[in-house]
Image (cartoon, rainbow, N blue to C red; front, top):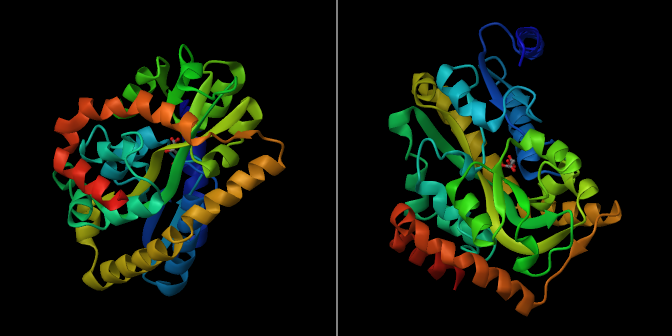
Length: 328
Ligand code: LMR
């Protein structure tokens, strides 16, 4: 951002916050990168904002900044540590600078579906992951679901060989890079807000994401089609600054934690449906969705699953075993 753009951003956000917050209320700025409708995270953040502002009126006030209007995911964790925002929900692939424990979620074909992801997150191991970055100043409060990922490009992708030689935008995760390399493709880490333009101008040929993100960002408009691989997971950690959180009065913290937990349970139960509706909306808008036969999908599994071997030390064989036991 130029200095002028930065000043404008600060003015706009200051205005937005002062409009919604009364004197004496604790201001909770929540920054995220997706759209607000037909999106698991967008809907959850809006619901959280509404409940905090109603039920904690006079004590706390939440202001949500969606669509990367305040920060990209590669900036928001630093902003949290600086105290410029108090909550964010980056995908689990965006914590590489802080911890490797979330790498298990990026390993291809690790979880059968979002219910398996949910069960793993709610296990003792999963819950402990929320505290894996406390020493670095970040505390995970809840996991929020998006869903399983699909792959798209500027040409039809039926077999994994079709992806070879293409450039794919990936989130900044070593596992996601390795997945693309296993396909003979070239991974290009890039901020979410830049993907549409990069696909449109041919800076990259393809991308991987959930139905709700492919719909919300209109990626289908600038891709040949989307192949239903269900190969990965995009899930989120609602994260806060340890010092800020611990500095809250206990009654405020407890009320906020309770509201957040209720919103999490309510919206996580709907995430699958939200993605299904986004898929239907893509088709209704003229996007192409390609289904794979079981044999065709197995070829993607065979091509990508060897990546697990590269990351066993980071994620732990016992955690892989636990995830597979949940699938069974
Ligand atoms: C992405 O960068 O593709 C996603 O993590 C965006 C999001 O927040 O769903």
